[in-house]
Length: 205
Image 1: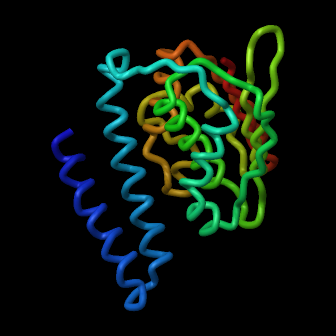
Image 2: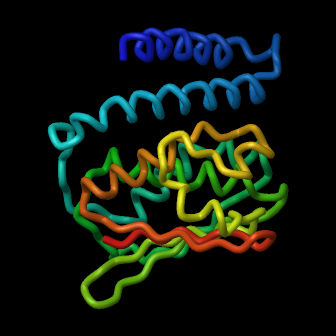
């Protein structure tokens, strides 16, 4: 945890330097890389915090659309860099009881995976609906999909699967923390995928 906090400081300083003096470098590219560094640092810090997650929770009545749109706005450079953009179809009246920070983390990880394994120019559909007292939040991408043999193990710590090895972009940590966080919050997650056609992730509140 000490190392993570030390690394977050230079990342923040570099970001300010680029923003104040963009004329001497490719500021967009540099900021994208800083976003990536920051994301990895936050991921490892979240992994460490899992051991004390219950002490870190603040359960609130939240607008699902508001939380999703805030994450999408935060990650706008990622979408522009890969030319993969989400569309949101969530009714403003849908509300869920959960922790804002941890739900935002879960949404970030799912969107990052969707972008990472999607073709340039494709889309990600984010939607939600209510049925039998539950609210379901869905993410549908049209990327490379997950091989059937890998699907049962995607939530295992450090498991990268065929996609992670082929594309060298997976740490095997993100989905593990996502599953742990959702378990602690009392929410469910289901992943369905077809190779060559994409992946659907559903979170049930």
